Length: 246
Length: 298
Image 1 (cartoon, protein in one colour):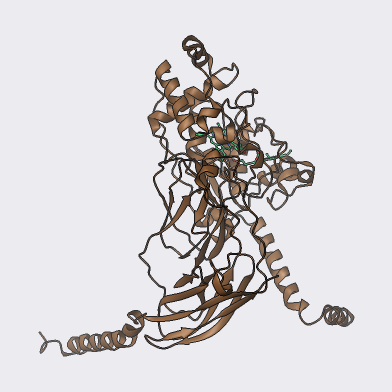
Image 2 (spheres, helix red, strand yellow):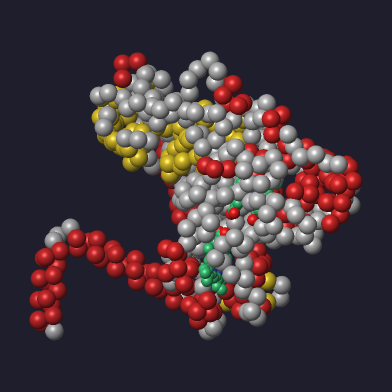
């Protein structure tokens, strides 16, 4: 067959070679090991604002569930050494390939509060809304429908099965319960890898491919700050942020 | 021509360097908006009638009958809107967001063309939205297409799949009692109150998606539900929710058979109307007692 159709054979070889070259060129990008990290801490400079206590007397279950602690608002949570909790960190510029995350995170309704207060997630990532409470909630996120994220509102009475959802576009989405108006939290939808600061204000964004990036820190009251970082293959870059108390 | 150019240049320099790009952008979006408004290729289908946002007549109908409340741009900012004060008078719907209360489709999805068609013919009780039953069918279906042309969502999303409603079973005393248990278990009373009088513990603080005060439905004062009064309508209302309001969807937490029980129980809360003779009679026969608020909140 080869002997009979030399041109065809040559053409086939050419195509094969081109595919090989293509694979070599494209391959590393597609399979780029995303094993770098960006770490750091987020602090609040100045006196933390007073977080008001919550009056839950509308719902005796909620009062009882919080009998041993004094629940308060969570808009600004400052830990030891001025560390800011619940700050979302993500790569706002420089990512070339989409990330794929398989983790299914949980947003829980517990003791008539949201846990966590801020749930960060990738665009398209599935998450679950659960309830541990023996009182009815309704889970009601309020995104801007013009972004492609459509608001919905589902009841979660005691023993309700989890609600599984995802969001289409990056947006900081407020979520509330109409039954318990103090319940207020966030779905922080970003593109790519992300992290949320812990109680001491520390964070690590994992699975970052090598590259030059802009990292953004978002806090629901203080807004956004950015920094440029360079991550080497498998390396770690550092970015600390400080927000100023108003 | 030349002096006009000079005038423009002077104006531009007065506006300053930074204002210019903003101006250009503003003009672009304005003209884009205009183009969007004048060339809507949006259709609607109800039964065997096709509606068309380009039908010569619909724009005139909208201008004459709807624009005063819903506004030229469909954003709900017509001239009348400022006089409407929630919760007594809800604000007109913003069609650009395409969030609708009356849907046969799950929460978070677009309604069907039929849903919008039905709403236009039905009006919305306890609001300024009139009943538009003077129009021909064709006019109403065209208006549906016109409403859809205001939001780009209708280009990128499909209407949701209507929920399945099994055929209505026979009303029995057991079903009414079971319905009361559902009302207690999923805690409708948190908003609607144990006796359905819109006075639940959370009623006073409810707000809609725009942060405006909104009252729960009062079952006892003869109000008609906005999204229809038949048994099927009531079933649909709590299984899909009223999007844009605190009224959630219960589709994940009430089984279809239980949903009918709940419909029958809700009927006993209403004063006598054309739909609830049987339910009220049975409730009376068995001496159905109202739920006990104290016991529920324990």
